[in-house]
Image 1 (tube, rainbow, N blue to C red):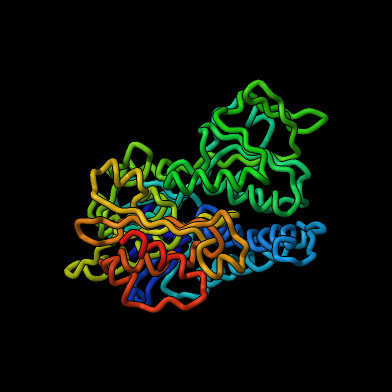
Image 2 (image 1 turned 90 degrees about the vertical axis):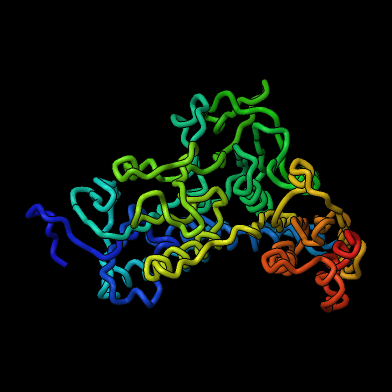
Length: 458
C-alpha cells in the first residue's frame, strides 16, 4: 500500500489495531476489511515474548529441580546437580523468537488485507493516529497496547541498572545471587525459577505479606512454604541501590545485601499514556486503564479497548476473550456480545502452585455475603498420601442463600488445573450441591480434594 501521508492525505483503513498481542487474533469474518496493525515493540505482545509462555517454560525445569531435591520423602534417591541456564534459555527463546518472527512475517506479507506498521502510535483525534510521522485513519480502532513494568523511585536504582520481567529470562548465565524487589505473581514465579535452578534468592517487599490480594489462607501458607527456599525480607522498601566491586548492594531495613543481578517486579502500568489518549477524548481510570463497558467499547464511538490497557486483571486468557467480543461487536453492531467477568480465574505458577477464582473469604465477609467455607488438605485424600503432601489444600466458599460457589482457592500441585470445574460451575451458575453430588470424581485422582472441599462446605 502506498504511503499517502507524504502528500498530506492520511492512509485510510477500515480498522486500526494498536498492539500485536491479543489484538492480532483477527477473525476470518474480517478478511475483507482493510486493516492496519501498529506495533512499537516485538511482534506478538507480552504473553508470547516476555510473559506467561516463556516464564512457564522456565517454571517446568525449576519444578523438576525442586522435586529432585525432595525424592527422599518418597523413598527414592534423587538429587539436583545444577542447571545449564543458557541451554534452558536457548530452548525457550529458540522456539518463541521463531514464532514471533513468523507472526510478524505473516502479517507483514502473508495477509493481503493487513498492513503492519511498526512504530509508536499516538492519537491526533478520535479517528486519526500518527505513527512516527505516518498518518493513518479508520472509523474503527482497537486499542490493545498492554502494559509495561513499573520502575519504583528507589535512590540509585536507575543508575545501578536492573532487570524486569522483560529481560530477566534472557540472562547469559544463572546468577549465584539474585535480588528481587516485589511480592506479586511475577516476583514469586521468578523467585521459584531462579532459586529452583540454583540461585541464592533474596526477595524484598514493601508489605509484610506476599501475594497480598489473595485469600489470606493462601498467601500465608504460600509464604510459609516459599520462605523455606527464598530469603524473604518483608515490610521494608530498599532505601538505596548501588553497584560496587562486590556486586549490587541493596540497603533495606538497616541491612546491606549483596547480589549479582537484580529483578524489579513491583507491578505493571498500562501503556495508555503513550497514546495521547486525551486527543481522542478517551476516558481513563486514575491508574491509567482505559474505561470500557462489557462490550469493550470506550466512551468514544468507534474505539474499543481490551487487555491490560483496559482491565486490572493482566491475564492473557481474559484479553483473548475480550478481543473476541470486541471484534464481534465491530462486525455486528446490532447484535452485541458482552464479556462476562463473573468467574475470571488466575494462577500463580510458582512452587507451590496457586489457582484462584472469585471472592476471597475476606471479601465475602466485607460484602456481608452469608457463606460457608469448605477446606480440605491434600493430605486427606488418597493421592495426597501418594504425594506425601502436608502443606497443600483446596478451599471453596459457598453462598448459603443461593447455594452457589462464590470463590475457590487451591494451593499445591496441579492447582491451576484442579480449579477448572469450579470455574465452570461459577460461570454457569451450577449449585455447589450438584457439583459435589451429581458428577463423578475419579478415584483416587487428586480431583477428590475439590470434591471433599465442596462436601465440607455443604
